[in-house]
Structure formats: C-alpha cells, structure tokens
Image 1 (tube, rainbow, N blue to C red):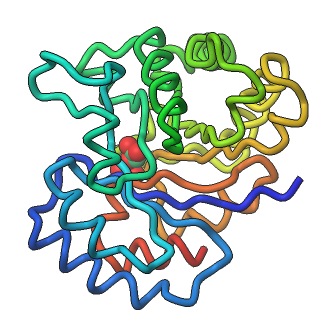
Image 2 (cartoon, rainbow, N blue to C red; image 1 turned 30 degrees about the vertical axis):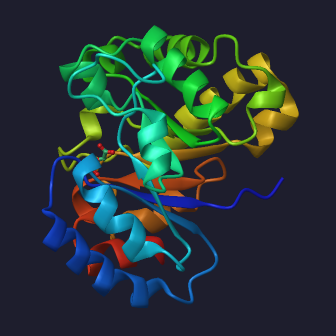
Amino acid sequence: MARKALIAANWKMYKTPAEAQAFVDAFLPLVASHTRDEIALFPSPVLLPTVIPACKGSKVAVGAQNIHFAEEGAYTGETSVGQLKAVGGTHTLIGHSERRQYFAETDEIVNKKLHTALKHGLVPVVCIGEVLEEREAGKTEQVLKTQVTGAFAGITAEMAASIVIAYEPVWAIGTGKTATPEMAEEAHKMIRAEVAKLLGAEIAAGMRILYGGSVKPDNVTALMAQEDIDGALVGGASLKADSFEKIVKY
Ligand code: PGA
C-alpha cells in the first residue's frame, strides 16, 4: 500500500510570533509546488494564531506539540483539543520523549490523549522510542512493543486510520547522533509488526511511521529510502526555512 510521506517540523519552545511569521513567509513559496509529501508544522501554542492563518490556503498543515486529554477543566498551563481546533489546528504530537522525560507522561496518559485526539478528528502523531540504556541492554524491541501496546489500548482498527507513529530513539534527539538507516528500518519493521498484531495487517500496512532524531538535509535521503520509513519528525533542522525545505525535498 502506498503511504504518502509526512515531513513534520517540531519547533519545540523556539520562535516568537514575528520569527514564526518570517519562517512561513520564506517557507511557503519554497514548497508551493511540492505535492509528493505532506508537510506539517508543530509550533508552540502561542504561535498557532500566527502560523495557522499564515498557512491558510497552502498545503502545509499546522498542529500542536501537546494536548490535554480532558475536554476542559482546571488544568493550569494546558491546552485542550477544543481550543486547538478553534484556532484551526488539525494535528497534534502526543507523547514526545521530552514530554515523557520532563513532564512525566506515561503510556497511560499517551493513550488517553490519543483517544481524545481521535474523538475530535485530529491527526495524532504518537511518539515512541527507547533511551540509550534500553538500547544498550538489548531492550529496544520490548520497549517499543510496550509503548505501542500502551498507546493503542482500546483503539480499534475502525478508529486507527489517521494515526501516525513517530519513532524517535531518545539518544538521537538533539544529539547529532542519528540512527543509521538500517537501525531505524529495523525498529520501524518491529513497530509495524506490533501494529499488525494489535490492529490487523491492513491498518499496519497503511500506517505512516516517521523517523525522528537529528534528521538533517544530509541524512534524510538515506533514511527515506528505507521501505518502512514514511516521513520525518524534525526538530533542530526544521527551524530555518531553507534547511527544512531541503528535508522536505529529500
Ligand atoms: P531533533 O529533534 O531533530 O532536534 O533531534 C527531533 C524531535 O525531538 O522531534
């Protein structure tokens, strides 16, 4: 089954509204005729009212880096799906390793967020990946299986069509150390096999699995050449329009 690649920018806690506007002004003309891949930007919540209108009419989608699982409530500092949708957001990251590491997000929380995102028709990008000690201890497969199973609890094949997974080995994020294309492909195959067990072969064959972790213009082509790598989630190298353009046009 042909999977349309998704190339996504995770801006993390960078850029002011003026800087975000300047990025979009520079970036959109560069990708105006690029139809091979889907493109998405994930800015901080305060940038969404700048970035979403600026991308209107283009093929560039915009989403949040995080949502809360509750519809609304007394959750200081959080953003609801309703708020995200009201400003025009269509996608959301869920369970990024920095959320897991610094904000104590568990597989159970990831699962609740996934249910909320799907209920409201957002495209969820569920992030998983092992830390260095787990890889060195030979536990990568076990960790990925646990994360996929935990994230997908109560998710049926009927609900799953829009789900995107991002495999981001934590030791490769922001470190300049990329998994080799072969290492990444091996992990992506394991993840797809696990999805097939949970949701069936057809859903697994159609599900996009992105690679993330120090993706750069000079390593993206080899990663994207792998059979099971269906896109990229890019942090540092997505902050400049010309760098992200090169990645989009791998
Ligand atoms: P990086 O970040 O490209 O800077 O390694 C990727 C991510 O955290 O999504």
